[in-house]
Image (cartoon, rainbow, N blue to C red; front, side):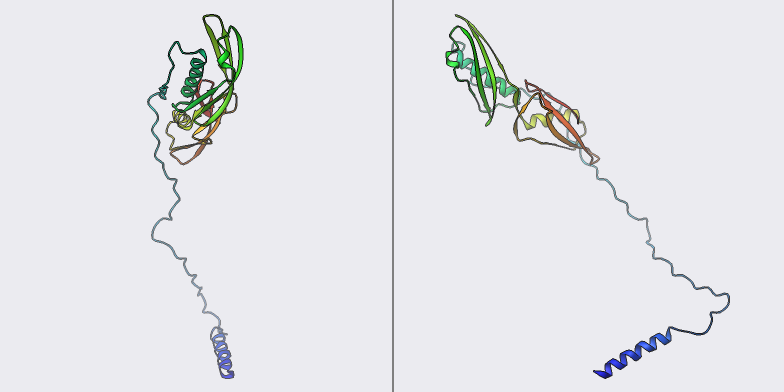
Length: 216
């Protein structure tokens, strides 16, 4: 073990001695610095990927066909429930199972003014509204109002694509079916452009289901 230690120290001394010199450098000689390593071509630069734009809708959003209309001589309550259901489905943008519940509506044929609270359940999503019925002996008029409306996601995305032509992707913060107040700030959507930039948009829904889109 001692032998190996001595030899290592000797070798180190030899290397140290070999690296030193008392002789001055020759006159006029200048040490030549080593040149940095270079590549044979230009340095690569980062590039922004170009995305494929989504097609802009060329036709208006289709009005859904609602089936199950009662006969013209059906009870008034049945006809009103269907009318509210039909309106809800058209506003949402797609025909779907819809249930309308209005406690007291079966007495709406009695002459007088009837103010009722109704619940509309569209595709499993519910919202409430007010139903006013003016009934006379042989006729009746009604009006249903609500601060809320149900709408499908596809209809909102379609409206955003019309407002943001050339969008490569649209992401809206909502379920496939969402109930919103038409007096609220609307639904937040992000549009990814073909240049891979993200732009915020807002989709506001009117009481009849019209979608109004603008940059946030």
